[in-house]
Length: 126
Image 1 (cartoon, rainbow, N blue to C red):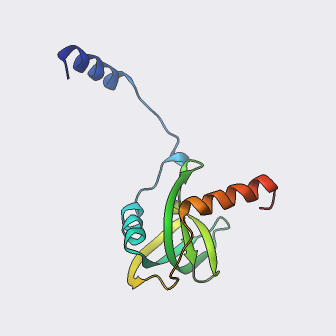
Image 2 (cartoon, rainbow, N blue to C red; image 1 turned 180 degrees about the vertical axis):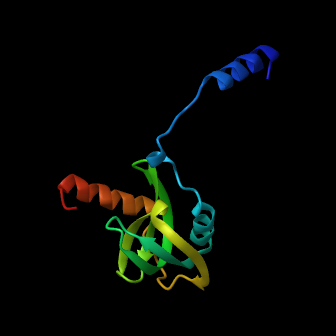
């Protein structure tokens, strides 16, 4: 980088700040482990608190991560509900990879899942 460009970049870095309210702070605690489980197709055990503050234990098969509504969301096959579910990562209380491969051989892709959800919202079915 040229010295003049470097000085401008440093001046900007020293004079730009972003203040995010605590309620919008992104929780990254489990993202790395979830990425590993997705790529290695391993089942994960979660202790999860839903929006009603109810805690449950779930065995899931994670298919993807999506950032929307200022939060990370995990899309996974839930063995308890026998359907794909959206889990807000910040609501995960604890998790561990079980080292067991997925029991369901073929999963929908994250892109197809998101397209299906978008279509349901457009039709007002959710």
